[in-house]
Each structure stands twice: as structure tokens, then as C-alpha cells.
Image (tube, rainbow, N blue to C red; front, side, top):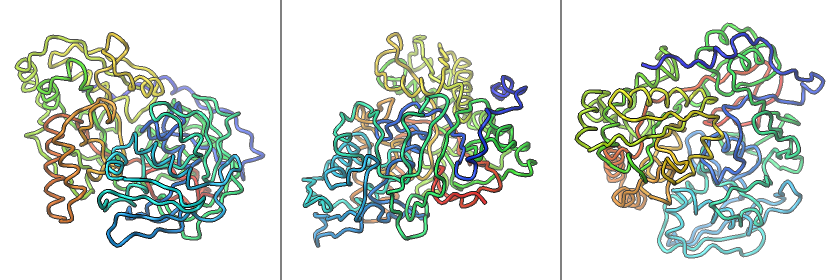
Length: 524
């Protein structure tokens, strides 16, 4: 098994974090994010750090509460025709973008269309939309070809690939190209002049934002900004981040390194909490466009090699409190979870080696793109490289910073032209809870997530689930879909874990949720 990563070694001797001025401490929150913010467009990428950035800057038509029920956010509410084919929405009064322009129906429609072009849930919705139309600047409607029971759930989708509202002129950007101008209508505005990728991201309170009156709950309710300024300090070295938190030079470290848990637990002025009890699922994705993983038999051989304990111990440590085995593409704690068991994923290298030979593997080079600055993900790629070499694969572990991984995973070319063969990532359990939300089980080919697995059968099952009105039938369809995707090795689950975020004790108002929400927080 791969030994615990060596990130700590590089910074173990560092005892001081970057100096931070103290005269603005009362009004400034200093935050250490999980990774560098290299892509600013949360519609273009599913990178969690970009989605977190999105919640600062943008607002949503609907949010979800702690039970994942959709709640009005930018809209006052909606009306539905008796046949369920026409939905009418009315925006709240006084919504404004950070550039001073009012939020209009046209902005919402353009944002929805761009989101639908990239997001699996949105693509299901787009298939049944006859027309989006603006009645006036505050009212718009959607006319459907057939009833879509989960329309509000789509508009409220939390976590990655959230429908954020942008000005029409920006939302008109080609969905295949990332926007670089960051203008939203959320509680904080992005300070472009102070953005330095790899070092710092700055947000300032948007005084024209009018929060809802309801209490905040996950992504819904009143998003009250108490801090005038929030600074993200990119500190990839865990020892530096830990020292900065203990010394009060930063206020909140989103994802502390598991090895530093005992140290932070002993720190008198630091609290550690699990704010997302369902946690995150770690997964492996193979590129289905090119050899060797365009061959499903080779992907299945890799599946036989996966031993989740190795992955979890490498990335989360030996303490079992915060991680679990989960041999399913439906996360634990979600409605359709059913561990498929050791028969599907035995972690047997001998069986995997034999299956690889039977599949006709011809020693093609497989490139694993893997981050060195993302402690939750980096060890996963290292374990895969080790285990796949042991079953006889020609593995090239291409390690780089996370931003480079995020950029390179867009490349659909073969590996000799800068492409890739395998990557690893994690995602919130709530984001992968059903066939409409989860891209893990969707077989959309070139229209789908990086790796581009194609399965008409998966799409048939997802659509049948979506339009079924029988809960038992839905459960059976979701079970079949999850097994089909795992049998085909669309993604491979590597374990499920919970994160204990760490913050200074004088920080209050921390909310539950799968993202580090910045509203409701204050000092003292």
C-alpha cells in the first residue's frame, strides 16, 4: 500500500504563516480553501472550489434546505398550470447585479440555457422544454412538451453544477468556453483587481444585496453577510495552514490534513466540526475515448483491483471514525445506496491481472493526471498508480498542481497529444443522490462529464426514473442504473469520508451544508 503522502515533510519546519494585518480583523474573514481557484466559471467546471466561489458571488432562483427541499431564493414564487406544462416565475423586487444593472427575466433565461447545455440534470430538462419566454423584466415562464416533476429540484440543484444567475451578456458566452468576467448578484462581489491565482482571492460585501427574511438553511433562506471582506489564502502546505490557524493569522481552514487532526484538536482556540454529515464519495474516472480504457473489459479488470481500504487509509488515515467502505455509485445515506459487495469490487490483484490478460491489454501507456496540492485527491492517484503497475499496466503518473489537472481533463486527445487516461476526484453525497443529480451514472458520451462514458441504456434508465411516479419503480430503476454503471466501470467508488473543518473559536454562525457557506458568519 502507498505510504501516507509526503506533503507534510516539505513544510514541517515551517512555523509561521504569511503575515496578515490585524487592524481590519473584526470585519475581515481569512479563509484557507481546499485548493487553488484556477477556473472562475462555476457553469464551465464541476471543480468544487469553483462551485464554492460561485456561492459567494452569484445567487440562485431556488435553494435547498437541510432536507434538500427546493425553496424560493431569487424568485418570490411560481404558478403552475393544471396540466403541469406551464410554469410562471416572478423575481423578487430590487435584485441587482454587482455592476449596478437590475436582474431581469432575460438574464435568468440566458443563464438557464447555458447551464442546461452543460449539466446532466439540465440536459434532461432541456429535452422537454418547448419554450422559455420573458413576460416582462420580473416575470418569465417555461412551457414544457411533457410534465417534468423535478423542475424545481433542477433549478435548486446544490453543490457542483449549480444553476447560478449571470447577466445575459455574460451568460450568452459559448457553454464550451469559460467566462472570465465575474459579475453576480449574490451577497459578495469578486474583487478582480486583487485576484492572484495560487495566492489570494478577495471578496467584498455587496451592500445592494437584499437577503430573504427566512432563516438560512443550506443554500436557501437569508444570506446575511456580516463580514465586509473575505480573503482566501491559498496555502497548499498543510503545516503552514495549521500554524496560521493556530496563530490566528487565518480564521477558517476548510479541509485540514487528517494527519493534523490531533494537533488541531489540542489547540485551545480552534474548533473542529463535521458540517456535512453525509460527507463525500471518492471516485476514479477512466477516459473511455482512447486505449486502453475504451475497452470495457480492461476497465472491469481495473475494477477488480480496487481495494477501498488502501485508498481511504492513504488519503484519510488509519482512524475509521470519518470514513467508510461503499462499493456503490449511490453514496451512503442517500435513498438508493446498496453496497454491491466484494463480488463486484474484491480488491484482488491476481483476479485483476488475469482479467487484464484476457481483455487483450497490449501494454498501452495509461496516464494518470494527479494533483500534488490537493490532499484529498492526490493520494488516490498514487494508490491507483501502484496497484495498476502491480497488475501489469504501463502507468505514467503525471503529477502537477490542481489547476493544471482541471485544465488538462478537458483534453479529449490521445495521451501522446496531451490527453489523459485516468483521474480521481471527490464529490458531495447530496450531489450524487439520484439519477437526475448524479453524473456518476449517466452515459452521455461527449455531452457528459470528463471521461465521456457512453451508454444509451444508462440514459434510458435515468429518463425512466425521472418520469416514473411510483417510488418502488423508481427504486428498482435506480438500483439497475447504479449496477449497470458500476459493472461498466463508468466510475469506480473508492470510499466515502467526512471532513472535519477547523476554525477559530471566536467565529460563530457556522452553517451545515456541503459547501463552506460564507453567510451568517460573524466574529464573537
